[in-house]
Length: 361
Image 1 (cartoon, one colour):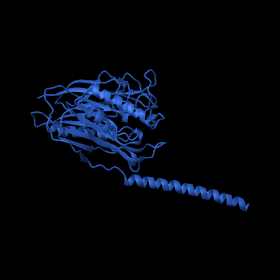
Image 2 (image 1 turned 180 degrees about the vertical axis):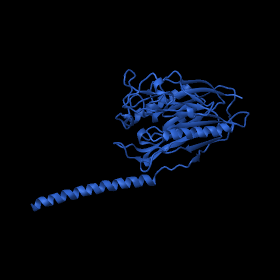
Image 3 (image 1 turned 60 degrees about the horizontal axis):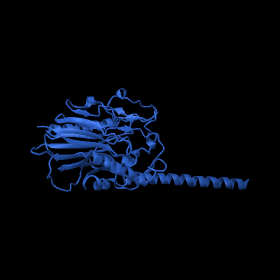
Image 4 (image 1 turned 30 degrees about the horizontal axis):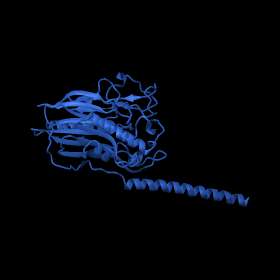
């Protein structure tokens, strides 16, 4: 009997040690994430490399592309755990490199005057530490682009295996010289401690002088909240509109483009159904747009995004599609065309969206 009691005491001691160790590890992780939390200023100036020489022309057709490149890890071979899939990472570094090469070729083919990219990694475990900004600068952008971080966490502890280090954000490139660029923080809807390992969304604004004018072309690169049901995404949308209003009231031309994570059409108007057991976006309420503002989307209803609940299979009846990528422009921007560049989700879970426009007198 005494021997049995000793065995029981030993078991409880071991269990107590394991529980204490787990609690200590959890507390230590929370403390580490709190100390290292990314806390950007409300507005952060982004350094520019040179003075303005090549200004944006008026009365000439220009083009801008928006492309959520899915950190070059969300091509046709991938699903993702947050959408109901199984994968946490792309299967290997070679797959990321293959997708990066394909994305670069697409951007070179489109050959836009302005490029707005979302989900560009510069040092993340999920993309095997590849600096994708450097890769694009070397292969597409002649060595120059602007970058604003929106996901910077020393260690993301979920799921299993954990995502680990994240350093990712928005990238903007311009064929014309930029006068000023800023990272503008958006509302973070998450509370402590969930906030510690989550995104800190932002807008990447670039101000470009216009030839023969004291006005500016203001481009806004955006990627609004995805997995949130607290109203944070809608708050971020209002913050975007308020920024656009301020610039338009100064007489500037403003185009905002990116991944709104909201359907740009009423869901019942789409030619594809969304299952109740996968992520379903809210709908961007265009009634919040001031009079004359233009919600620019591909009216052909070509999907701009696919669900990642499964690996891509164009012939499958249970694939899910969305139209959540596009632009908003102020009334003084003359729009010629909005078109989805159909890359059939080969290299990303999004398709690029191309806008042709003019700045008229």
